[in-house]
Image (cartoon, rainbow, N blue to C red):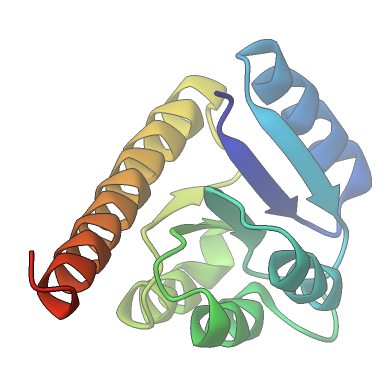
Length: 142
């Protein structure tokens, strides 16, 4: 099953090129061009990994991260940042981002981070399923 990734960045040419490169590596990519759109899309679809550009107009990647973590706390978020926003990326890590990469991100390194983030999410999901099964078994006296 393909890893479902949401990428949010206001630089359309950059995001389209990145999306094509990741799709060639057998990922399912959805792109949006604003923090607001990233939040709305993350509410509708259960993505395996979300990638946010730190600097976007209106709602920044940091603000989008904060909102997304309220309703999808276990979905890993990778931040993309330019040199001038490393402090913001570190702030994002403290707020629960999985990792951050400098732009332009090396596609193979980004793919590696996506794979790691997805593995972590799958592990969390499996633990939750196991806990739910155990709870059902206990409540039914099995």
